Image (tube, rainbow, N blue to C red; front, side, top):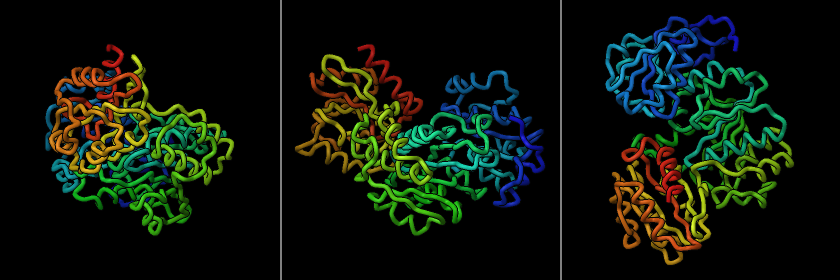
Amino acid sequence: MTQPAPTLSLRSALQAGPAWPAQPPCYEGARALVMGLGVHGGGAGVARFLAQRGARVTVTDLQPASRLQASLEALRGYDVRLVLGEHREEDFLQADFVVRNPAVPRTSPYLRLAEAHGVPVVMEMTLFFLECSSRQVVGITGTKGKTTTTYLIAEILKAAGREVVMAGNLRVSALEQLSRIGPETTVVLELSSFQLEGLACIQRSPAASVITNLMRDHLNRYASLEEYFAAKKLIFCFQGPGGLLALNHDDPNSRPLAAEAPGQVVWFSREDVVPGAERSRLRGEHNRANMAAAAAITRALGASESAIAQAITGFAGVPYRQELICERGGVQFVNDTAATTPDATLAALRAADRPVVLIAGGADKALDFAALGAAILAPDSPVKAVILLEGTATEPLAAACGPKVRGRFRNFRAAVERAAALASPGEMVLLSPGCASFGMFANEFDRGDQFNAIVRDL
C-alpha cells in the first residue's frame, strides 16, 4: 500500500499528547524496540511491519531462541536484530520508541525506565490506529464471547455486502492487514484488555464497539477488578458523541457503563429474538448472547434482518470453543481450550446435552473456583468425573471438585486417555480447563492442538 508522505515522527506524535496525526508517522531510520516476540505471531507481525517501513528494529524477549522457533522463522529474511533470553537496559534507553507485546505487563521495570527517559511506549494497536484509513472500525471486547461475536459480526456485514477485514486478538496481526484496508473497508477487531491499553496514549476508540460481558479475569495481571474493567472501557471512552456502543443488558457489570458512553448505546440480551438463531449450530445461553450482540451492533450499522439471518444460520462456530472434534464409539470429544476462566467452563457445562467427563486445571489467574465446584457437585450436574491437569490452579480446583476428581496428570496424553476410558457411549469428553495454559503448554491454542492430535490417535 502506498502511504501518504510522512511528516511526523512517531516519537514526536506521541510526546505531543493525544492529538491524532493528520498523516501516518515516519518510521524511516527510527530505532524501534519490540519488547516480547511471543508465540502468537503478534510480535513478529509488528517487527516485520516496522522493518518494511525502514525502521531499525530490535526485538527483545526473555525466552531463549529454542522456545520461539515459529516466531523466529516468521522473521527470516527481515533486517531485525535479536536480543533473546534477556532484556538489556541500554536497548530501552537507546530506542526512539518501544512497542510492547500485549503479554508484557505495563508495569515492567524496563518500560518504566524507558518512560522515565522520555521514550514513548506503544503497542501494535497504537500503530494500527495511527495507520488505519478505514472510516468504520468495529471493536469487540469482553471477558468471554468476544471471538465468536467478532466472527458473527464479520459474517453479517459480509452478508450485507460490506467489504470486511477481521483482525486483532485472533492470532492475526492487524498491522499486516493494512494493505487490504481502504476508507470504505469495515474493520472488525477483537480486542483484549491488554491490547486496549495501547489506545490510551492516543486517546482513540473504535467508532462502534461491543462489550460482550464483564466477569472476573486476569487478576494476576490487574491490581483489582476495577482496574481490569477500566482497561475494557478504553474500547468506547474516546468515541465522542458520534460513537456507538452495544452493551449486555443481562450483565450487571455492563449496565452501569451506559452512563459513561459518549455516544449512542444499543442493548442486547440472550432473550432477544435474533433472525436465524433457531437454525443456528451454536449451543448454549452464552452463544444466544453472542448472537444477540452481533445482531444488535450490525443492525445499528445498517445490516438487514435477512443478512443477519443468513450469516447466523450459516455460521459453524469458532475453533477451540466448544468445538466437536469427533465422535468415537458413541463418545463425543469436544475442544473448549479457550475456556480459561471458571465462568467459561460453567458456560460449557450449561450447554452440555449429555454426561461429561471434564478435563480441567492449569495455571492460576487469582480466580475463585467455588461456583464451578458447586455446579460440578450439584445433584443435577452433567459432570460424572473430573480429570485435572497439574498447575498452580489445580489444588484449589481439586478442593472445589471434591470426590468427582478421578485423576491428576502432568502428562496430557495420559489425562486424555484416562478421560476417554471413563466415558461411556452417549457421553462427552470435554476439554474446558477453566484456567490459563502456561506451564504445560505454549498457550491455550497449543493445548487445544495437542488435544485434537491425541484424540485422533486414540
